[in-house]
Image 1 (tube, one colour):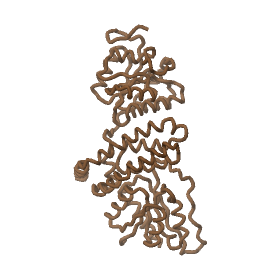
Image 2 (cartoon, rainbow over the protein chains, first blue to last red):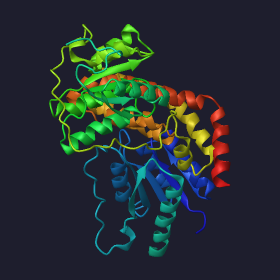
Image 3 (cartoon, rainbow over the protein chains, first blue to last red):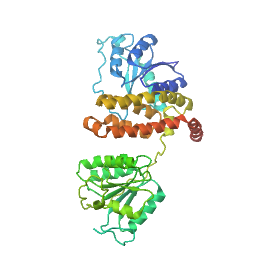
Image 4 (spheres, rainbow over the protein chains, first blue to last red):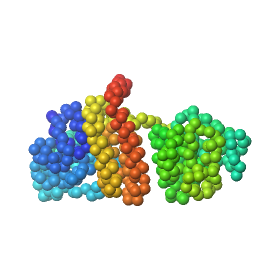
Length: 140
Length: 294
């Protein structure tokens, strides 16, 4: 599927190191961001195929980042794999819904939003990333 | 009540005892002696199993299965202080109160005070003197400086009850297999993550303490959450579990058991850091990979 480009946004540097290390080894091009604002900036400049996005981040959480991505036509179609804590008490209660695109407007068809639990395991991460990218390939 | 000693054939009252001790030899010796004295002994190997026994009893509604818990303090999986605290919490719902006797080689006054603060009733130094232990087990012979306890109700014997069986126990601070699973077995990636983590942990710990001292529940939860994530990546099973519990505490619970849990967490986090500070872990990791990957 060529060299897919992935942006990983998580405030936890060890997690970022693990995710980018595992995915680079798998042949993906990976960039990282340590907070939501940086993540949005890089999403606009890099135009990745997939963003791996942590939910629990200070200042701007994953849901807010996701909403901003969807509101901008340049980033609206990027697939997102959201990371949630497995045994957490993830305190975020209400996921913000993606901005509703005008019906029938193909250019605004939002990218996929999927969830994966933390802690991340390499095998599952690779499987999930490939699955999301493959489904996008079919769609577009 | 006449004094119970190892020389009497029958104790003043046969007790139902939960013996929590990780050393097989100590466990065997103590169980044999206690049974010889006429007591009924159920033995488990760590604090977690002890807590599970109580939780299970609570679920089944069989009431108090034991008159006394003999609790070693330093054990893998879950230490005695934590287990005692969780048992007290579990009991809070039923209003019962089992007698808990701490067994430890570290018989310092500070340690005694800590045991009492957590709700333990008596304290016996190791090596165990059976006379001393027998005395400590009897409610009337409580440590004079121990808070008065409710009169132990005669134990209600429920249906036959099996303590939880042995599980694969992770005795060290780090479950390297879990950590390697996260990185697909790549020791170099793990080493890079570890280097990041070792830098971040002290700051994270400091933030958590600051939040705790300000009594800000949400900030404590957020910082504990981050620490939990770091520990999860490093395979720091025990530390992660404590961070998880700290994250889940709110309001009153945070004031009541937060500080204790924080001390616990800090110790476990320290053990994880010590583990990774020694570069020998990389060799172990590579060896274990060769073993599993073939």
